[in-house]
Image (cartoon, rainbow, N blue to C red; front, side, top):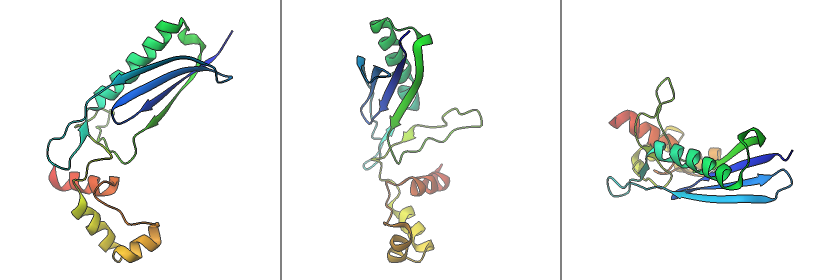
Length: 147
């Protein structure tokens, strides 16, 4: 009996899903788009439920179109957007829209973090680079201050 892997790329504009066998043979590909919301200039958000629905619907579609049984799936694997944040409650339910990587709402918080570590030059020497308003920690600080 053949065994398969379902791989998802949960990207900025869509979820790309592929079904492959363990030898790397591609059996199916599916794409499901979703929206980016721009509530203010420089801000970019997405609904985490859109990601979830895209993953579940493309998985079902791959299995339906290929006739592969869920019992033959060895694993699901994911690549996702970087530098985004989704605050959740104690049950894992999203509390708000996800703030995605392209959102630049927190440049002042980034400066504050770097100054806490001795300024931009010292921070860059310690961390390997400066951080900006698109990075996750400044966004978390922004959320704490503003929501």
